[in-house]
Image 1 (tube, rainbow, N blue to C red):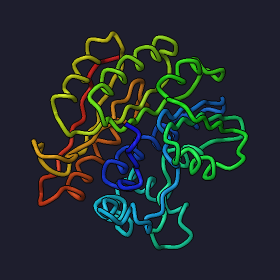
Image 2 (tube, rainbow, N blue to C red; image 1 turned 135 degrees about the vertical axis):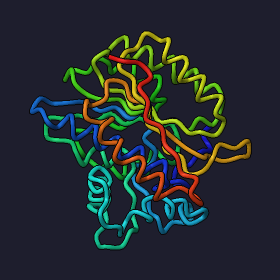
Image 3 (cartoon, rainbow, N blue to C red; image 1 turned 30 degrees about the vertical axis):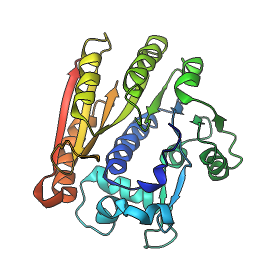
Length: 280
């Protein structure tokens, strides 16, 4: 359960989608002067070297961030994402990939706050090193799905929660759903961004059906696939389910996802979904 290391997957196609959506939410929160709070339930180490043995084992970043790195005429949301990643690299070379904690910190203002949770004994030390002594950020060596409830509603009354577990075990799906219902009950005006992999489509269908009947309003789904669903081992697609998304998000991704599916899809098999699971 704690064997998962995102370092093997940093910068892959799933990170591209997840971080584009994350950036659009953060941009939206920054439009108002009022402070906001962000919570990351599964923060990971926060920073990744794409020259490390982990990243080079499967080189998943090559069909993700690396394929977009030097391209021109990018959709606006992709160009913004690339510019954020470039700000973490000291040259035109792609050597470093920031995780969600560093991307969120990139958008924090003086009065904004970030809570990071990580339960992996090695990655928590890496995360603390990556964050340093930033007083706007609290790092906790704990189970984020348990800790998040006590943080809601935030004192800022504005913010988002990023939920991206590894889903290593089947019980992660009902656990995520139950926690999401508790969070929404305590903070119904918050934005919730739930990442999911597509490994076994039936598990995703369970999650979508449960959300549709949960009583939660204003739920949108954005999915990017690089190959057709298969019964074989491996992730073929991934997505983001967003509760209370920015009102512009769906229109922006209508321009972005077809381009990403075409650019990152394997042998022309790229595909995408944009769906409203529940209306406002």
